Length: 125
Image (cartoon, rainbow, N blue to C red; front, side, top):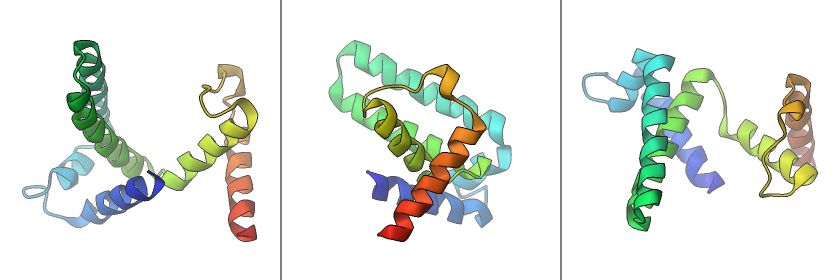
């Protein structure tokens, strides 16, 4: 999944210079964070609704839309998928793969530490 999200993010970033009249991605990036965030929330709600309705195929379709809008938001915010992956790796080491990070642990210095650890791991490979 990392590769797919990285490629998606790259395509979104490449669309920055595209014509907003011809590219939905360029239009979203031009419209800014409020519009992108609105679309992200709408897609998240649609995923939830489809799950409640018991429609796995539609959950898949809506999830792909959700990930697209997340990639657009990341691009607009200057966040790389690698930064998110590093945070997921850090959380897995601390709490296991299926645990959400406790609120008390959400500190900017911890995120910076995750970036450093990711860079160190990349240098070793």
